[in-house]
Image (tube, rainbow, N blue to C red; front, side):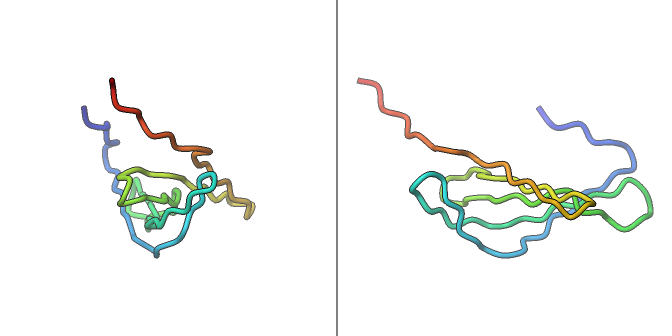
Length: 86
């Protein structure tokens, strides 16, 4: 199932850098991807940063920045391994 796209909208991704993200006691090297979008002829506006782990093939966190200068980081607290069936 594909996400529905708004008419006349465009999104852009830019890989800003690599960073380390800690989930519990574990450290993961992640790609920080900055996402932006536009729905008109205006220049794209920043939406959020995504912290993607290529090893886990999982987005570990998202960071939202607000016009008042504050930012909010939403990330996993823990990651558990799935035990094999016996």
